[in-house]
Image (cartoon, rainbow over all chains, first blue to last red; front, top):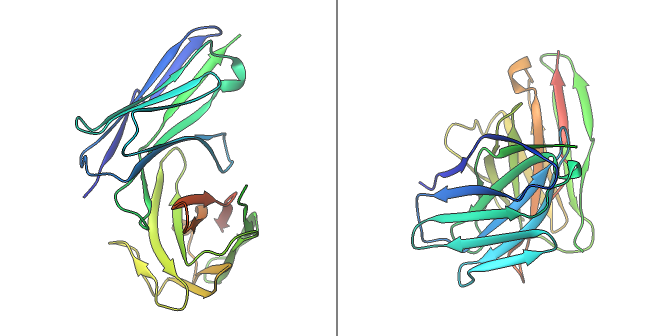
Length: 112
Length: 115
């Protein structure tokens, strides 16, 4: 059974710092991996989706990498801002048509 | 982009009553929809996979007689929490699968509070 782990569980940084969020998964046979953002009491916002054949995806200040063989992904956030404060969730899809399996998330707090 | 709606966004009910949550894909057809549950400060846990025109597949530990799922059309799936109890209070999120891209689009969630 696929398990997704995210480290750290919480992170506090001052504005302007570059930071890395980590995600690991136990079964490397994945279809894709997705990073989401969730604000308190709200739904999910998709940030980046990486197909199993890809190594990374970029969107603005966000860069996500995927090392499928080692079961790891990282989300890099450049020049963090207070508006980046949220919980970041990593999720993997085992096969086409199946559901995303989520990690517990990393709660990020960026202070001004 | 693809949009998924949920209704209601928030519901408060008394213990023992049933609550129905609707999940709609507004601009695409979804043969498959998923239902998740999220407890405070926890991650999303998959409850069941809903396929249009067939019975839902429930994850281990999820009571199918308590959480009734109906996927009667390609744009609508419903989750009914029967005989709700305070421990069923949670954030319920649905997701619709866009077949062509195999991308899951998520609804905004429904906050259920059972008194």
